[in-house]
Image: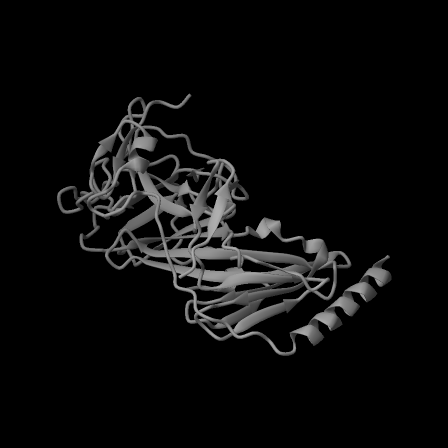
Length: 169
Length: 137
Length: 70
């Protein structure tokens, strides 16, 4: 049986966070919440979305022995006056980001452009390293990402997140 | 449909191991073989392959007629096998899960490491490459 | 030690006090527990006729390589 993998999201104060397992969407908006309704929580032009703190979580290894080489990227374009930033990076990865209360201030973690095509190698670490691996149930490092807009930004763009990981059976 | 099982040492119990569309099977120098999904109903992990005695590595399918074989004619060839899993449009109604069955070998040639990886795509096409990261979906 | 975390199922939105409780719940939205189960149907395969000859050739090649590399 292949490893069972889900995407989780952590929200709330770092003193009492909530971890939503197997999220239904990665919609970003003006609230710190999983499975966001972007219409109910729109990003005002000139503002940032709340950071998303997400994890690739191996719920069960099944018959597999290792998960590694995690890559994340976005499909779809945002429009001219918005950028999507992340802590994920092939060449400048800064190690594991420790969870802290998500902010809609400019994120100190999400500083690299989110790739818009599949990266050439791992860009999200495990245990703080892009060369890391999971050999039992556990999670990747946090994927931190945020949308930042200018006052000229317009509503209406739709994008999706994609993931890739290697599994040794 | 035969049922396969695998003993999880950490859980101290047998778990079900549903068969893969593409499965590996190795033949050793002495003609004996080891199958990922054994005829005895036991699932074997890749790590159980004794690469020091490996002569042939095959990817076979019970659904399709092709068999892809790598001949290990040089004991210095190191077998590689993994699944590349890709999740597209995550969290949407259009979410897609793609699995590339990747296998091949690497070998030291002088100071360099030569690597050949083959990937079986969802359409059962075979891609041969030195760099599986070039395979995009 | 990590701060105590509330666990929520992203599909049915039920809350749990532990990850184990989440993993054990039968999700009414997905119809299964978080530990996924997949099944595939195997069918018959066709064996290679030349395989014995190929194996013999590989055996000889491996012996030659071992002697060369020794």
